[in-house]
Image 1 (cartoon, rainbow, N blue to C red):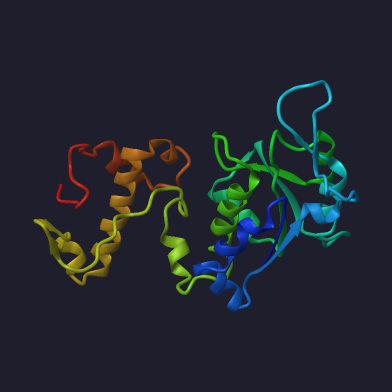
Image 2 (cartoon, rainbow, N blue to C red):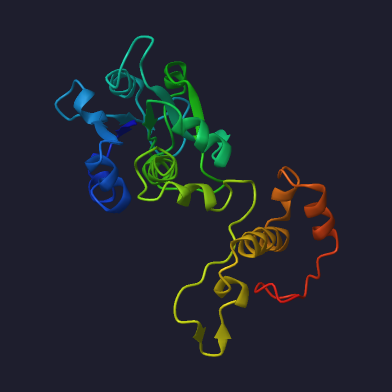
Length: 248
């Protein structure tokens, strides 16, 4: 998958894209990144990419000419990447949208700054995405969130493809608790079922603990989760005081 990023600060992405999973994805040929500097598309000697807003007000607004030029440089025609503006008014970025984007061959992530972008820029984008109801310094941190989440779902990026399937939100619920050695740490023991070698019991325990966690911390997710009648009955009779080790 090819990620294009349009930004006023291309250096923002140097370290994250050269590290860990993303760098390995590039080495394996599963990912590619091209960062497009908006200022490279300016036409004046000062490389001006922003200006004061018409009508007055605080801050600066990104100018349409260099930004649209940078967007169009990421590709044109029927096969061009989907153009996505990181915006607080966009669709909320969630697991479903993440899977939708991971199925595409290429996307362009457009990073706003300052007080935002000239409204006319929106005629040249296909979609708008928000990573949450909070304020960031610009679209760059949001772009990294989208890149990291989407890249995990691209075949060949993770060393173990099953990891993306087992994680939180992949099936509409939170992930089950994880344990590793030692079997006991400061009086806290690993649940016996995980040491039993019985894969059927382990799978059942993990599923129930995932449901227990979701009911406790994100009950809103259960409304849209694909649950069996038996699982819904189990949740209705769940003892909220029970521990996550599944002892009750």
